[in-house]
Image (cartoon, rainbow over all chains, first blue to last red; front, side, top):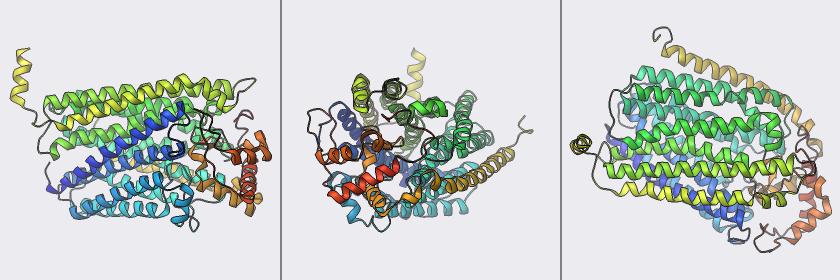
Length: 466
Length: 141
């Protein structure tokens, strides 16, 4: 860590991990409600658990992205952050807003929350991921503006690298793409069309740029490979993201009331969306093979290499399986989509967040890398979480296929609840892997509670004596 | 190779590709917005339908259900529920929740009065007439 102001990243990372724990707890409750519909009802109806689960996901990922920005932008610009104080105030505002949001979901009925917060004046509530009351949405915009001001001023006064341009540019994109959250037309089809500007625009567009910038940064640092080569790769990867993904948004428009030409356009362009993820794998492993040093933080390297693979599987492969219109005709709105969502969010975004945290946290705590004991705990956490998420994905895929066959494609289709009963075994498997994911998360968190740093001399001696 | 394909070229592909396809998308989106009101019969968005939609959103119906496949996968599709069940069943169903049947997924009671029930049903009826390119495959949603 070269600049004192990078320290403001630390509370962001810690809070991100805390919110991550909350997300998984709500996920486990939601999974149990699939198995026992009266569990915690009426205290916590499923929709409240569901929105807490998805909103915490977004908040913790944004926390981690912001922390990453405050850590990376000064280092790349080779100057102190424009205002560390503003970054710290912004942290507390964002954390408070996130906490108030979740608590209000849990303790205030949603209708009442809408009535209390002026939803009638400017309706924005009642859409997936964007359930927040109006004042919270305004708060998110203010937090984003504060972040953008701070990192942009830092960028202007310092060295201009491509990593920083892509990172700061994609943070601007992230903020701009949130603005359609305030556009909720009374025409439901238009509303759905515009809702995807936020959701698709983030996860199948802008966030892939953030992913590319973060991965590029940590690979430059850990492998010592020439920046020019890495930045060239990143430009090509993010170019492919937007070339495929902008019109690829059409794969959300097949069956929601939009014109029929999206069936062709969406299928063709979204079928190209796995390409940037393939390139990401090629890029990271080529960079790994060309490394000029052995970076002592093996755990961070594991996260960095795991991210492109899992992102390809979740976003690329699982996305491709359901993206073509004739397939989606039977799969749309089933748990197959949830399977894709879980593996893509985890593989691409949770893992890159954990990768940057793994790289930066030891530095923020005054060491290059954690002791090998701590790293072993962290790497165990990596494997348990990753395999568990694959288990969750396969289980939800199974449940989705049951729906496709019994409810959608059958000659004599069954009703929704009857089909859900048939898929019950898959909901059990999902919950089992959910529990093991939680265990993996605890193992991962345990790794933060070891004192001491990585010692070259000791490790070398041990390696030689083998 | 490095000289042949420079970083500046890669950056230009990124900026040019993004800009080009953004313009294409915006043109298509503009065209879609011209067609959507026809496809979904926006002329039928009566005050009652819109009141029903407001109730639908502020009770977070898509937190469990889907509408044209979008939402949560805990409860049945509502885009075509009007055609599947009809208005009387829908009203009776909403009124009788929660079922309290042990272990069965529960739907809260939203304490709608008769006018509100009519509004929600009118919204569901409007939804059921959207041209969704023949989705869902059958009446079960």
